[in-house]
Length: 149
Image (cartoon, rainbow, N blue to C red; front, side, top):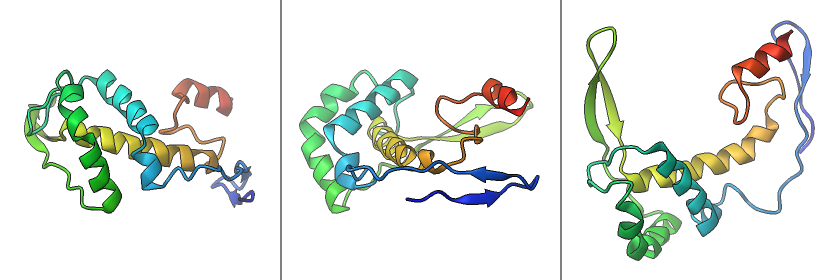
């Protein structure tokens, strides 16, 4: 890839980082469902300690539940036949009154989504401007404020 230039709203020119193509195809489904990626995704999902989805499989029960099923799930992901489980619809009260509608995916779907999100982030984040701080891993509001000074 080459370096791209774009004009910021304040007419300054920002330089995007130059990235070297990786020998690993991070966006490939094979890589996304690899043991390494799924294990990393599981660690992240487990650390979030979310509630079970419509299948009632909790974070605690998930490892034992998924182990005998994983090869079949992986095959479905690779051949495109995997169908996510419907989300559990819940309402929680808002501070300002009223209710907020949430959809809670099952743990398996959260692990798969986390693996996809991480790999796409690893693939595209290096192409974003070094001046970009919003929704960027390992970047904070404090760093953005220091950069702006």
